[in-house]
Image 1 (cartoon, rainbow, N blue to C red):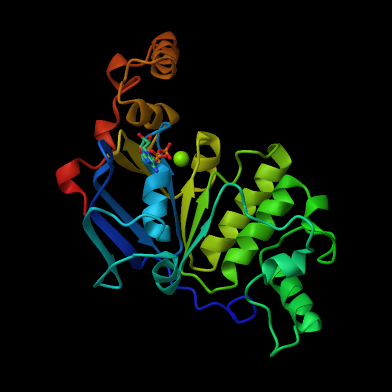
Image 2: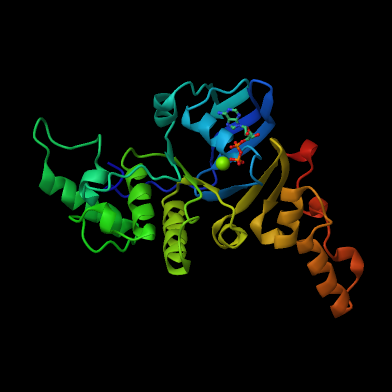
Length: 288
Ligand SMILES: Nc1ncnc2c1ncn2[C@@H]1O[C@H](COP(=O)(O)OP(=O)(O)O)[C@@H](O)[C@H]1O
Ligand SMILES: [Mg+2]
C-alpha cells in the first residue's frame, strides 16, 4: 500500500495526455478540442468561469461521462475511460467537492471504506496504524482517528477525503474546489497537503476559483473558457491580471483596468499594463 511504502518519486514525467477532447450534452457543446497534460510531481490548476467545462472534463477523467471525441494517452499508450473502474485502473483518483464522507463513521472507517483489511474480519488495529501513518506522511493535523468525521473541521474533513483517495495508490489526484468552503487557516492546511502530494510524485489537478490558492500552490495553469482551451501559463511567469483576462476572454475588465491604473500612476510604460496573456500564454498551435 502506497500509504506505508516510501513512494518512488518520479517528477516531470508525462502521466496522462488529453488531445482534442469533445463532449456534448444534446445541443450543448460542453467541451471542444480540449488538450490537457498531467505530469508527475506537478500541480496543474484547471481554472475557468462557471460553465467553462471544468467539471465535465473531470468527469471524463473520472469515467463518469465518456468523451465524444479526442484521444487519451497514458504512458504513451492510447487508453479509453468508459467507467470509474477504468479511471481507477489508470491510477486516477478524484476528490469531489461534496467529499462523500460518512459523517457518523470515524476517520479510520472513512479512510478504508470499501478497502477494509483482513479476511472476513476487519483488522482494526492494522487499519488504525495505517491511518496514522498515512496522515503523518501528509503532515495532517487530525486530533484522533477514532472520532466521527462529523466532529472534524472543514479542513480536516478535506484532509480525510484526500487521504482516502491515496489508499488506492493513484498516480493522479484530481481535487475539485478543495478550499471553496474553508477559512484562511484551513485553506493553508489544505494547500500544504497539496504540496505533500506533489512531493510524493503525484500529478495533481487542482480545480479552483481562488486565484490566490492557485498562484500559491500550482506550477502550471490551464484556462478553459466556453469549453475551449484559452491559455496555458507557468505560474512563475503570469500575473493575476493575465489569468483573469484569459478566464474572461477580455482585457477590458475591472481587474485589468485597475492594474492599468496602477501602472499609469507609477509612470511605467502603458504597453505592459493590463496586457493580454499573449506574451506568456502558449499559442494554440505551439502547445505540445
Ligand atoms: N449533465 C449535463 N447535461 C447537460 N448539460 C451539461 C451537463 N453538465 C454540464 N453541462 C453543460 O456543460 C457546460 C460546462 O459545464 P461544467 O463542466 O459544469 O462547467 P464548470 O464546471 O466549468 O462550471 C455548461 O454549459 C453546462 O451547462
Ligand atoms: Mg463545475
